[in-house]
Image (tube, rainbow over all chains, first blue to last red; front, side, top):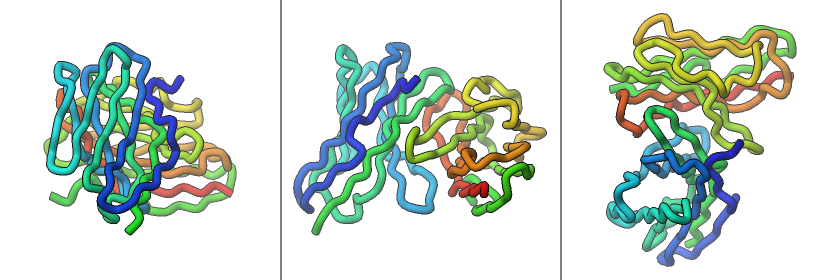
Length: 110
Length: 113
C-alpha cells in the first residue's frame, strides 16, 4: 500500500527555470513531511522539511508547500541549476515511521 | 562524524546463499532504519529500531529476512536463503528519536544470481 505517491517518474527543465516536484499522500495522520535528494551511488540526503502546522517552508532556492486538505505537497526549486539534477524523494512521517515515495528524477539542462 | 557506515558496498551472491548486511549508525542516534530501494517500489521501509528494540517490522518481506541490533552502534540485516528477487540497494539510516530527519548510509547493492 503506497501511502506516499510521486506520480511523475521524471521531470526535465531548463537551467534558470522553476522545477516543481509533486507528491500526494493518503494517511491523514502524517504530521511531518520531508524531501530528500539522491545522487547515483549515494544515500539520500535531507533537503527540506515542513511540519503539518505550516503550509510553506523556504530555504534558499528551495520551497516546500503543503496542502493538507488535498493531502498534497510540492517542492519548488528556483532557479534550477544543473547540479540539482538528481532523484528527489518525498517522505511523510508520523512518530518514527517514515514512508517514501518512489522518487522523481529531475534533469536540469544547461 | 563519519556518518552512517554500511558494509559491504556491493555484494554478489548465488541464489540460496546467506547474505548479511551491516550498519553502523551515527554515534548518539537512537533510532535505526533499514530500507530497500527497487526501481518498481522506490524506497521501502523494512524495519526500524528504537533504542535497539525492533518497533515495526511489518515491511520485512518474508521470514527469509531478519534484522538484529545487538547494541547502539551496530545492526545487521540477514537474508537466508537469498533469491534473485532480493536484488536491490539496501540502505540503513539513523536519527534521534522524535526527530524525523534521517541520515542515510551509502547503501549496499545486492545482486543475487
